[in-house]
Every structure is written in C-alpha cells, then in structure tokens.
Length: 401
Ligand code: C5P
Image 1 (cartoon, rainbow, N blue to C red):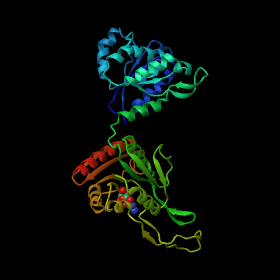
Image 2: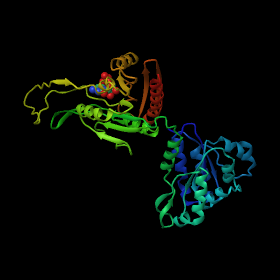
Image 3: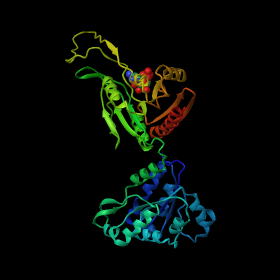
Image 4: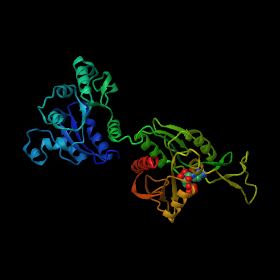
C-alpha cells in the first residue's frame, strides 16, 4: 500500500503497450493511489477509455477543449491535483513533444502545467529508441529531472529484440511506490528473525509451531523499502526469500541464536518476529524412536531467549519484540517489554483466528516505555510498513534522548 493518498495522473500515449494500462491502473490503486487517466487520441486506438474509467473509478480525460470535462475538473485544476504525472507507455513522439514543450493536447498541456514530478515509461521499437533524435531528447529530459522508468530489454511486438519494451505494470507500480517513500531508515542496518524454529526429536521428527513467517518477511521488505540494509534470519517457511535481502536460513532455535549473534553485533535495530520454540529435547535420539513402549517420556530443556540476550548486550541495538497473547494483552506485553529490556513490543491477540499466525492479516498494539499505539487490522505488508515507520520514529527519538 505504499501509494496511499497519492494522486497520480496516468498519461497514456499511442503505443501497443497501452493494452497493459488497465492492469497498471489496478496495480497503482492496489497500492492506495488515486488515479486519473488522461489519454491521447491515438492511445484510444489501443485501449478502451471505458475500461480505464472502470478500473480507476474516475472519468477519463482526453480533450483539452471538452467543455464538460473543464467544468468538472479543469486542466489547470487537474495539473495541480497531481502528486505525480506518470506517462506509460510514452511513445517517441510524446518524448519529442515533451522535450520541445508542445501543448497541443491535454496530456502535453498537463506536462507543462503541473508542478508535480513527471515519470516516463517509454515503449517503442528498439531502432526508434536508439535513433539519434530520441537519444538527444532523452538526454535533455533527464537533465530536466524527468524520471525514466525503463525501457526494458526483450522481444518487441514488431518482432525486433532490444531495449524498448515498457516495464511490466507491477514493476512500474513498485518503482513509483519506492521513491514516494521517504527513506526514513537510510543507512540503518536491521536484523530481523522470522518464521518458526524446528527442534529435532529424532532423525525424522521435530517439534515446531504454525508461524508462517509472513509478518517477519513483510517487515524485512518494508525496512528495505525505507532504505535500511536488512539481514533476515529465517526459520523454515514456505515463502521465497525476498529479492535483494540477505537471508540466512536456519532450523533450530540454537542455530537462530548463533546466526543472530553473528549478524547482530553491528546492527542498529533488531526485530525478533520469529516464533522461537521455548524448549528443545535434552537429548536428540540419533535413531528413529520405535513405538515399542506404551508411553514415551521426553525431557525438554529451555532454549536461549534470543531477543532478551540481544537486548542485554553491552552495546545493545534498538530492540523490537513481539508478543502473541490470548488474554491480558496489554499487561503481558508490557511485562515482556520490561523483563526483556526492550525498546518496543508489538502485541497481537492470537485468540482471534482471523488474524495473526497463519493469516494474511494482522492487528497490533505497540507499547514502549512512554507510550503506545494501536495499528488496526490490515494486510500484513501494510501493517509492516506502518510498524517500520513507528520503529524509525521511536529509534530516532531514543537515540536523540
Ligand atoms: O517470551 P515470549 O516467547 O512470549 O517472547 C516473544 C518474543 O521473544 C518474540 O519477539 C520472539 O521472537 C522472542 N523470542 C526469542 N527467543 C526465544 C523466545 C522468544 O527471541 N527463545
């Protein structure tokens, strides 16, 4: 959701990649953006204005001299409304018009009239992209701080291979989202534990829990999007390691402990999101236990408390722990905050089966020594972003105290 409340004008020009724009609108809207579509006349040959109106939930504009449209939201008003003007796909012709400041249709006029930053996702035949005129226009536009997203390499609609393909809608939406985020964690090193641990009983059996790792992975992605360098220490999960995040895979609590102690000595922030097994069997059986006896007794010993040990280090980083509770949420969470000597704790009520452990959604109550904040039920990725903003805020205040 990183484009919440961001007003985006999506300008569509007449290239074959225009057929992908309803999907682009959906991806932008899914990230929370308000999208208003402006089309050139030739764009309408490739994609239907009605489709774009339906997915954006807003009327589509295409005419500078349309009396009705001007009466509803005039072009100057529209230009001011935008936080960002994205042109995708942008043809070679559009790039040339932008370079020369033409204003002969609604989209080119908006480009001159808007104070918002302009982003361009070019799409054209590779020969046209390499044409001297296009490259010269590119240089001028880049000097003017127009931002270029792509083009991508690959096979083109015309059969050529080379640069000129429009980036995929998801890539464009991700890039826009990333740069609208203030890099509040720039330069910070963050270690995050995630997922369950497995405590082996014998070569074929283990003790574990239902943690999916989704919340920890979402936090790692959010921290990276906010500019941090992230190390993710993960127990066994069914989700792929996030791109460009150093991920250390472990199995048992002891392995997680060792990996954390190795990576945490120089980190600024430590987030313990893993559901670490509190106990392990005292003596792992080296052979499979046979079901010969009618009763089986195993002796368990306590695992080290990773979070508490990190928080008690002489040079402890800023620490955030999690508390999954079924009752007395506030009291138990604050107890853990104090006992483990944490900077913050995020508590969730796991008695509510619609949120938490294995679901897509979660809700958190966050506590620190001088305050608390409720983060309402939401998708884990959005919640992770809200929590990382709170961490950044608390970290800055604590280190400036
Ligand atoms: O005490 P409790 O297990 O409820 O504390 C939960 C918090 O402590 C979580 O942040 C969890 O990741 C962390 N923890 C840990 N090592 C353990 C047990 C819990 O880091 N052995």
